[in-house]
Length: 383
Image 1 (cartoon, rainbow, N blue to C red):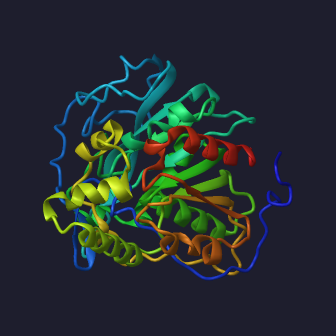
Image 2 (cartoon, rainbow, N blue to C red):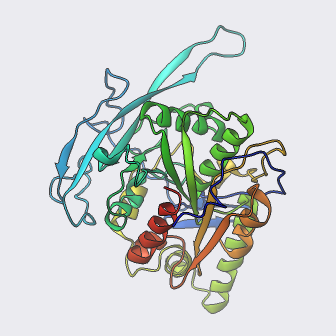
């Protein structure tokens, strides 16, 4: 039953202090190298070839949709394998949304260049449901596409779930100019996705770096203080999202040092870190390896968000949505990295914390049943 005390109309309240997230270290982390001062991936996979239906396939309409029934045999990732995690037929639609970037120099007149971002909606017929609002999913990285989060569809029944690959990775375009990327620009893109898909009422889910985007979006909306906001986020889940990039790098290096104390064999260090603190499975799960295989290379790694630290909204901001903060008990996003979300950042006390036993950074891929039940039941409280 919905907590009416928690779900009152958003009103202006004072805030508290601050912190942030990470994601670079992997909202999905693949094998990575820990270097003094920052975390980087051990490899930067080359961009995928430009093929029809994948990155670079520009469409004429701002949004195109192809709805169909999808089976495990039919849902293919444009030449990189069949999704093994969809256990039943699920209706699915997908398309492209155009985003613009200013390509002019400071001395010339404004010039806009358009790029496309790919989106995929599971159970699109339920997109405007009043009983079970859709979930808008924000992947991590930066620039590690949505593939590793698709198993949410298996573990959260009935709801529409909206995924999109942020600019620079996956099936979306990847501009070569580094100036085409920033957290603020990613927030502009997020607002465009919400508008173009007409998500009037929705829940927001962000994993790792995606949690940073989720928080910053909610803070932006709250600080606009528009009581007539056309699009309403009902609640938010931040999963394995740190409050500061510098803090999570320090924590990851501490964990690596402990692994070296156990066994100083450098040749096994990265794999031992993965199995202890990233994803506690014998092998890298296919959704995760698929995401890494199609990660971007321009806006990637903690270096591009190294100075990020989450700060609370202004004191005259509207009340932010209720939140749940999730992480694994062995997550490199440790309690120290995530505690400030509840203590300092959200401008209310309705922030729940959940630590998943036997999990690390990718609880969805380690214990999908429990993970999905937690996320779905939390969102159900605020439908």
